[in-house]
Amino acid sequence: MPAEGVSDLTPGGELLSAGEIERVASVFARAGATKVRLTGGEPTLRRDLTQICGAIAALPGVESVGVTTNGINLLRKEGAGALLDNLVDAGLTSVNLSLDSLDATKFAALTRRPGKTLDRVLRAVDACAAHATLKTKVNCVVMRGENDDELAAFARRWAGTGVEVRFIEWMPFQANDWSAGKLVAYDDMLGALRSSLAPGERLYQRDSDAADPHDTTRWWRLGGAKLGFITSMTDHFCGGCNRVRVTADGSLKTCLFGSDSVSLRDVLRGGASDADLAAAVHAALQKKHFRHGGHGGAEDLAKHAGENRHMVRIGG
Image (tube, rainbow, N blue to C red):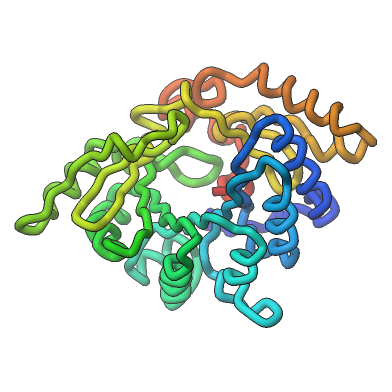
């Protein structure tokens, strides 16, 4: 969360409606997309999230519907049950929970929320893990001097529960104060984990876990913990990336780091047919850059970060 918070909220009329989201998802599904993930900003702020999830899950061809969330609202009462339970009933198959520290003081500094909120997030993770049909991941962005001493604690916290913990290299975005000195590279993360092993513990790589050629994660095991590493900065996976994003206001981004986008919302509201919408998506994809939205390494990305949106306005 930027230090100044998020003051320039997008007006409601500029956001995609539930029906527009379903229509965009249906066009992608007919083109062969099998996975849809609802991110944000924070998707649980939408009171129609369960409706959106159910509509997408019912689309022919869609095999997986996920949500990326800070977890704070997942246990919120919604009708007869909790939001999480209603989402699962609607067809939710996976949850990624963003959590960068297990220390209440650090959590408060990073999220700009009271430290006591951490307990709500941890209870949400455990509630997700209790759903047998739900694939649950915890996403931790690692920053030097902030939380790079917590990797082993994250691994042990959910060992044996089925929850997958992913450590993400810190990426530069507008106003997130990125610096090369605070970037903890993949090799350094592995080194930190190895240095904190207890007697008898072993950290080993599981190549067999990466059966999907488009997987963005390098998977390892530590005892009963399944750990992933997303190495966007030091060892990019752009050549195998088959993902695109549609922001909450309907902008199609073919790369997380790219500043260029196409407004599918304007195409939709201009009276376009589904074929027209599909053609707009196809045209955008033909212009997708080979790497990092047309930028070079981490330093070049940082130089152009101001041209992109805040991460809180792109989605996790």
